[in-house]
Image 1 (cartoon, rainbow, N blue to C red):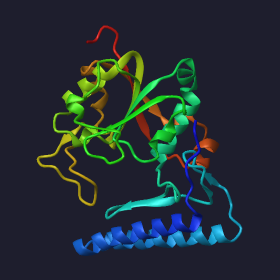
Image 2 (image 1 turned 45 degrees about the vertical axis):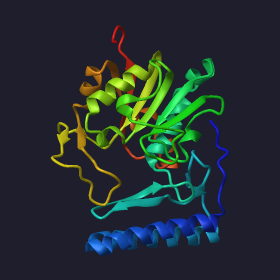
Image 3 (image 1 turned 90 degrees about the vertical axis):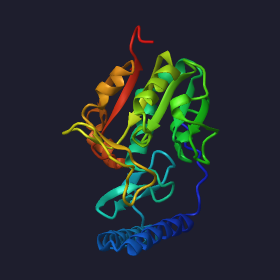
Image 4 (image 1 turned 180 degrees about the vertical axis):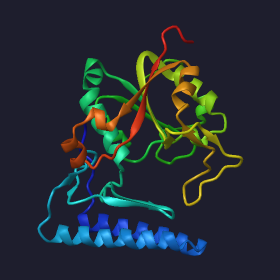
Length: 277
């Protein structure tokens, strides 16, 4: 996989992270969220410790396999009501799910990309997600409004031919779409008969999907229509997929997960069901 990301200067990267934390804290202050301010203070303290380590004798207990950053620990990720240590890369900003995806494609799907030049669709792209894939793929990014996307449009009526892509990546998109069943059918339509898709969301595996009465996401980005539950694989099967649940703890050994700070999580591998239209 390509790791030739343009690397900003270390101090510039840390300054951007500090500014991001300060901006979040300002939002929580306006909302009167004392817990958000407290979590922001913890994040700033963690940044200070990491910067001190960087300027002293830096260790390399963590490596970002997306951009190549090395350091003692990744940055925390937090909202007003939650806080997780060792998640976000200080340099490129990717989280553990992104490092897991890059690792999975590189180590578990290498043969797929070596067989021939593949056409991939990155739905809801971030600026660094192109680097999950080998240089030689025919890459297209797609989103309703993201400035990063090469093509802008609605996933419920995607402007691509049926079977146009050998692989798609769709993270945290379907839970923003009112008619997610239609979007799932479009994902099936876009995939070639021998292709696969990777799908990831916040999933409550102990409960069914909860549909919200109105779009909401406190402290988040954009309207959240639902929180998916254990029935998500069945929803995808109804759209014409076979679905495998992939577990980070089963895919990679403990040393690899620790090196890239990949936390326990599950994501979905979707393939076209034989005979499905």
